[in-house]
Every structure is written in C-alpha cells, then in structure tokens.
Length: 186
Image 1 (tube, rainbow, N blue to C red):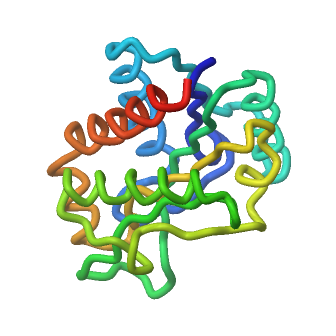
Image 2: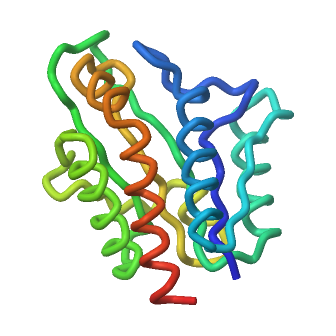
C-alpha cells in the first residue's frame, strides 16, 4: 500500500493566481514531497493532470487516478485565495478532510501544525483544519482516507514570503507527517 499524491487543478485548468500561481506551486510542493517520501522509503505515487480543459473533467480525472492506485492515503496539494486582491497580512494554512472522519481530522491537524512549525504561517480557522462534505476529492476517493492541503494563500504577501523562505523545510515537514502516519497505519 502506498501514499498517492496529486497536485491540485491541472495544467490546463487554472487554480488560484496571485503573487504566485497555484498550479505551478502545487506541482513543486507535491513533487518535492513525493521525492522526500521516496527517499525515506515510503511507497508513494504522484500524479499531475495535464489533459482536461474544464474543472469537472479535471477533478474526475484526478479522482479516477487516485481510485486506480488503491492507496492507503490520498493527498491533494493546493494553494488558496480570498477575495479582495493582494493583501499584506498573513491568511494562513489549512488542511481539509471529510466531515466525520476523525482519523483524517487528526492527520489534517498534524499537517497544518507541521506547516506552521516549518514556516511561521498562521493556522487558519483556529486549528488549521476544515471538515468538508462537499468536495469531490474528499468524498469520492475510494480509500476513505484523504486530505487536501491548502498550503497558503497566493494573494497574501506575508503567506507567500513565508512559503518562499521555508519552501524546502515545509515540503520536508509534510513528508515527515505523512511518513509518521503511514508507519502507524500500514
């Protein structure tokens, strides 16, 4: 069994754009986390969706890939944005999980706290987690164990500064949290 990681959105389906671009940065982070996990000896697979031109087909392709992996854990890497243009202050990081899935809620909390420890970003929504029951990635991946990382906000000057400053440490921290979870659940 493995950890299956995908970058959010797709090459032709733009995500959030601000000071940085979600698609570009999600690919960088997911690729580095994949490499770090592989170097740690954790079975891992990585997917970037490059074909589809609309959001529905894009997410369906990502979910289909995850479901074809039959992994132990499904992880999707994203960046976020809020309305109002570029903001100077920090907005933070959060990790989403399916409503009612307490084990994934605990993992989401550990990931968000790890990101904060690595970067100095703030925890969004109090504890850095958000239970959702209306996101296809969280509700339609077959493993029942899925988290969606919102690394930081692309339109926050402070978030982007901290993300850039601690990029490699942030990726390593995510990999360490995922490895710890994997070793406890494999």
